[in-house]
Figure 1 (cartoon, rainbow, N blue to C red):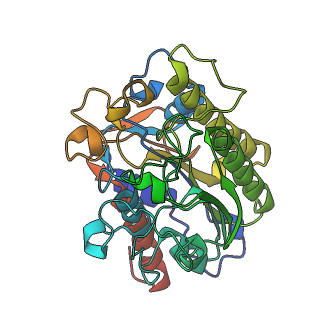
Figure 2: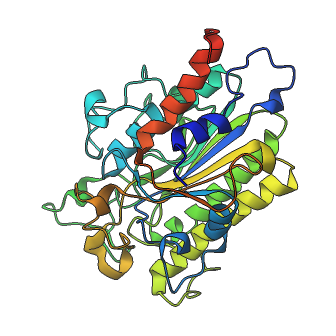
Length: 357
């Protein structure tokens, strides 16, 4: 299908910005599920074999699959800045990746999807990995999110060795200087992720938080930004999915992420919200190929994360809005995650300034 994705998504959020609406639920909810290091070829809609991904499949079958969607940059911090602000990350000083000790963060004065929608009456939340600022005041609640529950950066940014349990003691290894990985509730550190066993709980924990947010805000328009830390290495999976796939630990992780999507879809259905919710699933960049069997697939494109080859930037993108986006469509238009905010902003600005279409 050659119809412009920009126009499709613009249609999907066509009621945004109607500040005087008497029926707030006429504004569509927006959910963006942003995976970490999930490659173009890591799910069945994009060619994965050996692991069933029925809920990724469901979104593709009930919505649209983009085949030429790209991250703004092939690494975590920069890509997330691009998605949330609609800006080239280098222009706003967010190239590369933030590590502990970084002296900069995303400028709180930057408009984000969350701040834009919050001004327009939406409830907003981020559950999962942030990676746009390591310390207060540079956590999500200062960028338009009403709620945050998650970790400030990747779950390999900790003083733990590759076995997932041993402390790194070699002073020449920069991990030895990393602080414990904090778990944050809004602006308060409530716990630490001590080892890979603790990390194995994150997919379920963030999914449960997301479900609770949907249920709590079912009578209000909401923006949910669910940012799973996986399948970024080191791989971690809950006991309920361990050993369940034919592709080892990586396959188990993909199965659990697919389960998470299924839980979100099921909640939308149970609460009667599916037809009024734009559901997007994508990834921040390509797979971290140096981890071999513990990394994913770029789907045949060259290289992966941290490179400017296509395997580093081209990522999966699925979007569903029942009744608004035709089932099973495929769009090959060139798009990037920077296009999400301006698509929303264009429609918002047109309405609040009363400009003609």
